[in-house]
Length: 261
Image 1 (cartoon, rainbow, N blue to C red):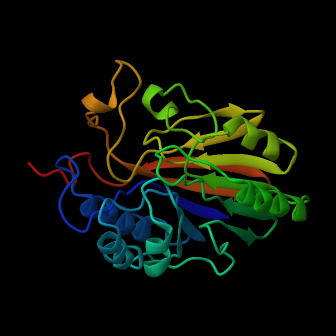
Image 2: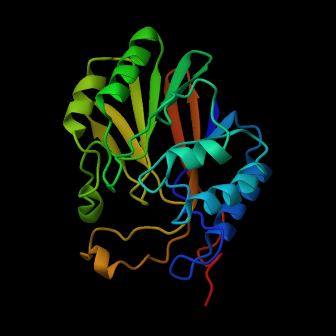
């Protein structure tokens, strides 16, 4: 199984994000993926798809995603709108009615894409209804390895500003998945930086954004002084075979691609 993992395009139909054109970045990612990884099974886009103009941004991002030579499965992040996403983008038919949450079954494995949006907050949550769905999904495939994609990390990553807007109730979430020994890996967006490690003996990885990157934690910074570092964006190429996982981070364009002066 080969999967392309992308996150946080923060797409805007017009304008820039502090001088960065997110349309150029997304187009570059799709073109690079089509050129070099069209043999992948599908792509997962793990949240924060759009900017502030919900209807216009979703209708504008849709044709970009449809340029992809492989299916692109969107997820919801804190900056997304569930109704807007449903209205303009393609979702798997098994998606939950009330949430952008679904499972994808492939040979010998299950991928679970969670909805961690908490309305009115940049932090996340997985409510009792979503947790019940997750528990059922993990239980019914107990003989298969499961790989979970989610926008908000449920643990602290020693990234000070981002740790303030992680998943609320993260310890409880980890308790729930810890009861199922088939959870093999967590993949998370939101923090705009690549990190990796283990939590409760479960490996995890985060990824940089398709749009702008977040600064390293040192020297210290705050949201009021946020300046994106001169780091190029990337996406992930994920190989999963017989329980083995390899994740490669791939730079798809130069740092200055999309920068407008």
